[in-house]
Image 1 (cartoon, rainbow, N blue to C red):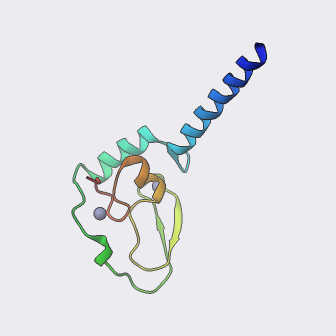
Image 2 (image 1 turned 90 degrees about the horizontal axis):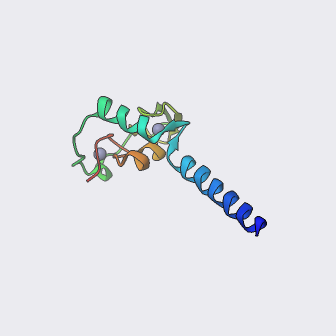
Length: 100
Ligand SMILES: [Zn+2]
Ligand SMILES: [Zn+2]
């Protein structure tokens, strides 16, 4: 009986760690990302079709507005947010505005 409880506890801890990892970006928590998003990027919704935007053909280094991670983009049309921040805060990867 004790063994089963231990397995359940280990399982719960595993889930908590996993959820935590999914809700942080570059070590910044979801709550912080959302607060930063509202103060830096506002409450507007994205209405732009970003698929029409074409950047220049050059590798460009950019920094995510929310978590501060630095990455390279294959063209000059750099995004505002990294994939993680966009997913966690429900914002547009390209312009940082809220996704509907
Ligand atoms: Zn980010
Ligand atoms: Zn957008």
